[in-house]
Length: 201
Image 1 (cartoon, rainbow, N blue to C red):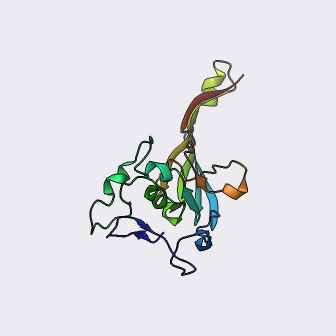
Image 2 (image 1 turned 180 degrees about the horizontal axis):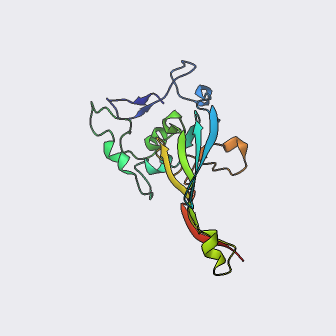
Image 3 (image 1 turned 90 degrees about the horizontal axis):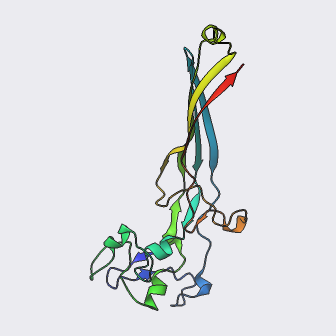
């Protein structure tokens, strides 16, 4: 995708073989779902009975094909649209990345699978945070308890990313490596909170 033509409001595609037509012969490989770097950091802190563990997970340099936008920015059909369509082309001279509202068959051309829907999938996620408190052993022995620890934990607490979808850590095809890095109405990972205790007699 070369962007929206300001004079027509339609998406312009690269004519790779310079034959004046956009056909399957103009297809090319764009984007890369494989990150340059992946990793994580774990930090554990302790003070006067309190313990805090923080696990950060990151991915850098991978692309995500945001296939949901094929429908959520299509300006047609029965699908709800995102607020991005408010920036659509409406009159000659408009400079935008969202094409005009049209009917078929032009609408199909404006939502071709293309680099228009490829986004940076890099992210930094606070994957797990656990805060606990272990009661004094001498105090616990008075009530015939060996040890007592209370804790609260949160998973997928925050995600820092430029990706516009619900979750940059996606794989629409499950274990299908041919569709890795594809987001098509994929449910995001749940944010969960847990509280509990560890009790020993």
